[in-house]
Amino acid sequence: MLDPVQEIKSKLSVEDVVAPYVQLKRSGKYLKACCPFHQEKTPSFYVSPERQLAYCFSCQKGGDIFQFIQDIEGVDFRGALEVLADKAHVDLPKFSGAAPKISKDEKERLKSAYEDSNKFFVQKLFEKGDAEKVLAYVKARGMHDSTIKEFEVGFAPDGKDLLYRTLLEKKHSKDDLLRSTLVLARDSNGQDIVDRFRLRLMFPIHDVQGDAIAFGGRALKKGEQPKYLNSAEHELYHKGSVLYNLNRAKSFVKDEDLAVFVEGYFDVMASWQAGVKNVVATSGTALTEEQFKLIKRFTKRVALAFDSDSAGQEALLRAVLTAQPLGMELYVIQIPEGKDAADAVKQDPQLWVDAVTVRVSYLDFYFEKYQKAFDLNTSLGKTSFTDQFLELLRGVEHPVARDHYLKRLSKEVGTPVEMLYDYIKQVKATQRRSHAKAEALPLTKLSHKERLVTYFLGLLFTYPELFFELWRGLDTFDGFVKNAEKLDLIKPYYRLEEAHYLEFKNDFAAQLEKLHTELPASSIYKQIEDHYNRAGAVDDTFWSGLEQVEKLRAIAFEAEVKNPTSDGAREEFVKVLTLLYFETL
Image (cartoon, rainbow, N blue to C red; front, side, top):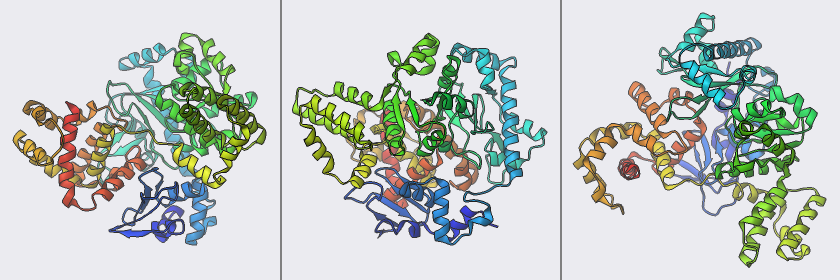
């Protein structure tokens, strides 16, 4: 019997699901339309019947039919399942609920595997040898013995399958361990099994009830990517619906009527150690609506402590705009000297305690932030300040709060408050919300280098056979130069050097690592190369073991849309390889 997800997918195509929301037009083997998630004039929303994906390459929303419904209807996975089950005439009661169901026995087996894995990692941290250096590192970060033990910090030693063999000895089945994502199959028939976590500092992630359901692993080898590796999602673990440390913090959150959000595992541990125990973190993901709804069970008051760098400030703005429609009472914690919680506690625990105590309303924070960012002695500065702040103020529903800040803004820019009210009313409420989501939540702006690497990976996912055939053929420096000169690129070809090319060609993964992009390009490349050498294609077994799988599927989809046939893909590979070569100089 199919589970509800598979039964729905067998009965509904992606075009069936998307068509009621947008007007789709055929474009080769794709369908395209103006994006339903944001306003645009030029279509950037594509549907692939072959891949069963719907995705906007501008605002980067969408995915399979379940993700599309979650985004378009503003529901969680359970809600999307109910919507699609009704459309597909799938009877959910026989599955004992709206979510894909696994038996109680299966749940217990998965939880047991994580419990035994946790014990294994904790034990390894206190052994002689490599673990001694790891334990010293944790203590150098300011963690006390009692904190290390309370948070069950562990160590995954170097080795291909140490955890796997240990769990087999404890009578866990291979199928359960693969299902848990604690181990991975490196071949299509599931014979070559390896541990997911190797040579990493381990942090167990628990559900609200306190059961370990996932791990976060920090790399210990210099240059290892990704720096933080989470368990892949499985039946008990969905990253966007879990908050690290909520199992311990929930009673303190209730007592304080406040949840403090920090960015990382060490930040949580340090805060706890300093006495601020109503603290949680997101385990390396952007804050989601599901996570805010989860914390709302315990409090409506949230204080956000994010890094002061551009990435941290962008994450803060995203979090604020995600929480606003949920009626949360939001505050911003400003740590002295731009430190994170862990660094502040290490220097002086009182620094962190005081920062939490003197937290400010998010509207006060942004009012002062924009006040400093713009020259209010000029018309342009006043206009920019007003527009930026009103983007936030439009999300404030309470009339008293809105009036208070409009009067404050009026005084600051010297404009009558009535004119500001009129300005807000010029746009319909529904259009305002749509605009705020699309325009006030820009994704991290990629540099030329990052766009180049992302495009290369997308091409590689889509045409691996073509790439490796071409790469084998570019053995000689003369051949590379000849191909490069055909591209008519505005590049200083005199900088092409045979010695560097041979280094670039023979250790390509290391050259990608030099580029320091957001995606772990070197690691992804090596995974593709290894899998292709074994399987001869980038098939489903490859995707099933991959981190950030939805993001990477979207990258592959975009590259395919730009290069629907292999005819032009060969020249694209030559072009992007040439440009990557110049980036490594």
